[in-house]
Amino acid sequence: MEEKKGKKSSPGKYMGIVATLLVFTLLILAFFMPWWSYTVTDTSDDTVLTGDFSLNEVEFSLESEDSISTTTLTYAEDEEISTTFQYTSWMVYISIILAFISFILSILVLSKRTKRNTRMATVVIFLTIVMLLVTAMYFMFSLPDALSTDTAGEIASFYGTDTVGSVEYAFAPTYGWFFLLASFVVMLLAIPPNCKSMGNNLGCLIS
Image (cartoon, rainbow, N blue to C red; front, side, top):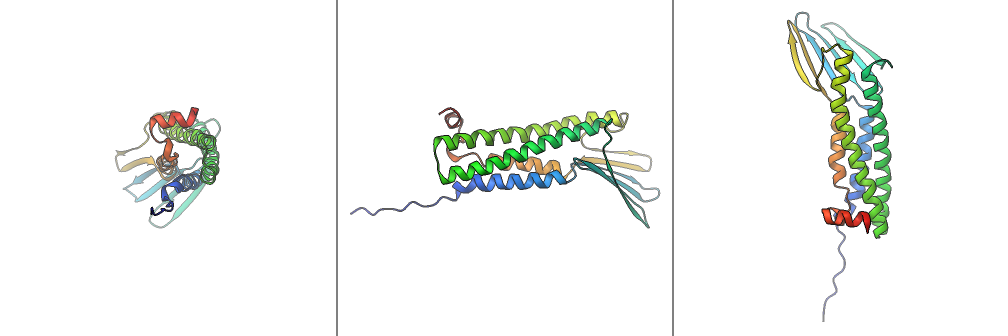
């Protein structure tokens, strides 16, 4: 007599739900975190000026030996940097919406796996992946041009360091941008298992 084997539940089938939920959470956090920062350190008097640039505002903090002061400002409309952060925030909005839709469709695929459900989930997941990549690349290449315009060429790169006399400059992307990159990587895990090869990708999209 043949022994009937019960179907084992594969943890991998929950990957889409977990990945899309994690991406949604990362993007929400990224939206409120700084995306780029710079630090100016004057070694002659031990003062440190830090600027943390979020999508909607910039926070400056000045630290000296005996005091710390903080100022929060919104971006001026006539600044090029304002346009960069505004467009980036819009793209993050769209990415958040797409990630949420991907999460809902991943649940739908798990509850009822049909070609139609899998195809819809695959399309939205791929759109999310593309949007995340475009957003990261746009911010990376657009910000240096905006900074160069607004600072008259004093800062013209995405990251770097410089020293002028006793003053040291350091600037680089920070939490928000790296959370976006992490979202891109995690979102790749959300692709339905039977759609991960190139041939099956086409099958998911057109079958």
